[in-house]
Amino acid sequence: MPLSLHRLGSAPLSELLDDYVRMSLRQYDVNMIDDFRAYNATVPRQIALEAELKRREGDQRRALLSLFEHPNMQVRLNTARATRPVAPEAARKMLQEIAASRYFPMAADAGMSIRAWDQGIYKPE
Image (tube, rainbow, N blue to C red; front, top):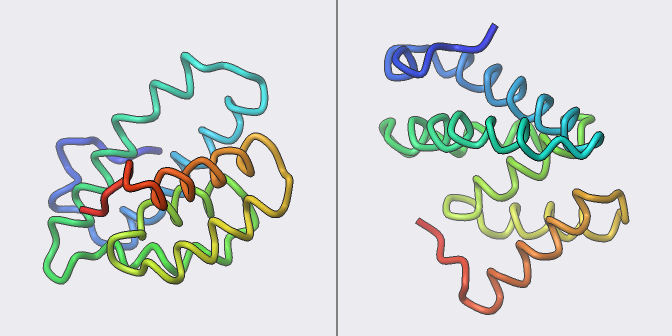
C-alpha cells in the first residue's frame, strides 16, 4: 500500500524506497497499455518521493542507486533520472544502457533524458 504523502517526512528510508519501486512499477504497467492519464497521476507521488529523499540529511537520493539492479526497466529509468544530481556518472551510464536496450518506450525516454542533459535543457538540482 502506498505511503500517505503526508507521512513521507516521518517514513523510514526503506519505506520510501519501497514506495518508489511501487510507484515505478505502476508507471510501467500503465505505460505499457498507453494509459497516459493513469501514468500522469503517478507523477506527483514521484516528485514528492524524490523531494523527500533530497530533503533528508546528506541528500538520500543516493539510496536509490541500489535500485539500478532492479529487474524492471521503469524502476531503473526513474532511478537514473533521479540520481543525476548526486551520482552523474552512474546515472549517465544507466541511461545509456537503457537507451541502448531498445526496450521502448523506456529506451526513448532515456535517450531524450541524455539529450536534454547534454544540451543543457536539464540542469541537475
